[in-house]
Image (cartoon, rainbow, N blue to C red; front, side, top):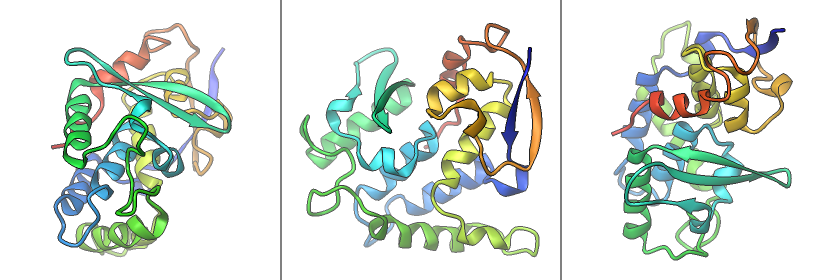
Length: 212
């Protein structure tokens, strides 16, 4: 028995190259609060809702010296665990050390130690889109997309790689019918337990795009 999942058309999303270019533009940008780049990178790589990322604390992370790490995310009163590749573990360890964060601190605080609000990162995100994205007639409308498009682009990339929607939903959080609510096309995807069934979670970790 197969499951129907809404899948966004490719032109609604950012490509892996565009996501990488957007993050590179933000990284080290003069005048940008230090937490903005790591915040955006985690949203893009782990397919988090921006609100989920804003609420993360250092204590939500398990960052071992070797092997996979773990991120615990909470949404609507429910918690889920997301495995972290070694590259993500190293990046987050470096960020915590650089920012001088303690276990109970917010992972992405603003300069006053509060949760990074939309006014902190939205102007930077808009500037990055203006600087990086093409301005041709077909794609120029995407310049106004919210930062959540990074999450959506990641989810659809995972699905496009053949990962089961059940495995993607386990990482993304929402129920299957709401996995990609803005979708334009219905694709029929297989049931759990197949080649990309529950084991697909580890495949997402192994095949997720790498950021510099």
